[in-house]
Image (cartoon, rainbow over all chains, first blue to last red; front, side, top):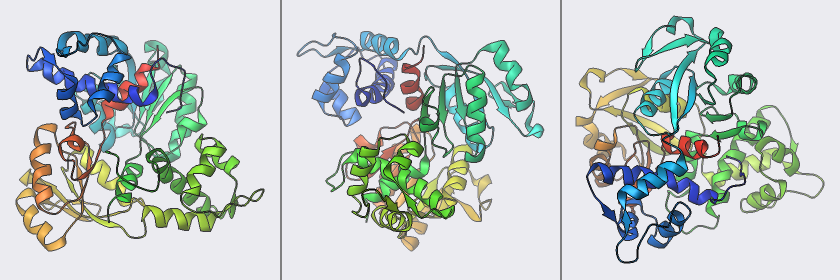
Length: 209
Length: 209
């Protein structure tokens, strides 16, 4: 993702979803208080790092007491806007698209998946967790009628640029890109998060003999 | 991934696989030279950032000439060890596992996928790109016979910790973790890269109104 002006530094911002997920788990277990040291044990980040990150979100921690779990969850949800999900569509209903769709529909990911599209006509009408797969022919009409703001691309690199151009014209503002096209560089006017499995593996590989 | 001692700073290291992928593409198009400015246009990183990153890999750029594509590709491949792939196994052959396996088998990701495992016996014997799915019952035996060093986890969070513990005992040194368990914090003696789609989406969501 390209750096944009923000009150929260990018590295801190990238850790907030992890805290959100961990705090959500504690809340579910009816834990009422949590210290930065406990959060450090769970997440692997240092306690001072955690205190600094959370200071961008709220100032509700107390020395020797820790954070109130409900309040911290509320503030993290507010900053990450999970309670105000954006409408999203997913393009490409292959193995990856189906996995991502199923995963995201069970999560507080700040989006509300309202449509799934694939160019393969044979898939049309099949359901992924109650959402029917539609053919790409009806993408324009669907976007005009429903105004999604986020698109998740689970398509090959070769199709990604053309699709991103079309989506931009249809009012999409943010893209989670699983293809290997460098969309964040090519579409600086959109918010793009490029995800590459092979890049992650190469970084991991570097440390292993 | 937790920070380890290394000659290359982590942020630079994370960009090297992107350069490797881009340079590979240029090589395939028979491009012989490339400037940092051209790489900046393709990747979106600044030219000075790119020159700095590449200086950790080699010193073969010439002012006003640019980089020799073949040499740069050779040096990036050497540093990222793509020419010396590590044996890897994948656990979990659901939609995500199948997508990741298919993706990685066509990429220079520094690994050589030698086995795929799933606990569902009905999947045993089915092929993913010529690799048969095996039942988890034979994981121990397979690892003793073949000594894989990397594991890719495409299993639910609830199974991830037990599996990581078992894999560590079997000699696995690095894990690419697609479950939402915080394995990098819980297994500090392993190299773990945690990947979460919903975290990526929440970071993206933050910038969108």
